[in-house]
Image 1 (cartoon, rainbow, N blue to C red):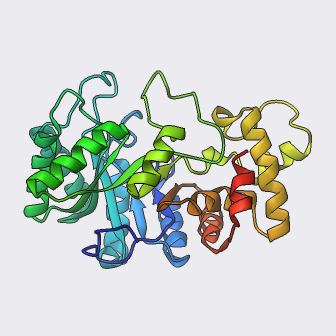
Image 2 (tube, rainbow, N blue to C red):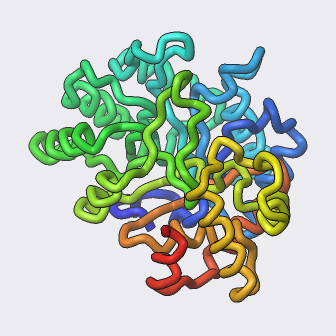
Length: 322
């Protein structure tokens, strides 16, 4: 359970369902089927964002609207944790920070309307606005908490230095604290395909040590490395890595291939799948990690949820990271 979030409606599940492409690349019916499979499998933590699918024609807001329609159709609001994100810069001007109070309030207004709810359980700042003092940003978020519009907040794609500043500010001013961080992290190597378009923050050695010291919970996006540890790539690896990676090619590297082979061998010994091993690796870190999993296939979401039943020794975790 995430610290300091006992005010959530339910205890958040360890595997989070990423809803980025729901209602756009994944149609409504399939999105509902994935959501159904996730909840039936014991999941209850759904992650979306104000900006999702904005890069597609008529896509902006599709994810939040689809999640909201599913919540209404199933009467599920009281049994799930809803997380969404705001404050993302314009897609064509990533340098234009949008963590001012007016922009955050507008994003939150839109998100609540699309989701059909009156309070977001966990509200992420999707990007930082480095030129803006953290106290201005936190004052706005604290206002949302006091108004009952969000229960808690976290940050996504922030540097550790800015998170430190925000945590210190919240403590000094008696404001609600930052409860979690969201960055990219997978057993595979870091991706390169988004670097120029939308800079993201991925786990590195320095951030890893920072999380050990701070013990701030982490939600890890890209945790499945877009299918790098799936069945298709397992067959590709066993065939000697002939040709380019069928799935997750942005994560492919000599390091990634070595880790994929280790995950395949370990999965055979444990009677599970390589994807479950890759997710279990994140679940067995020295601080709380909630991998964000996504798929257009219900059976793959069920597979991801099964990672919580996989036990790894410290030596096995270390071997996977080599």
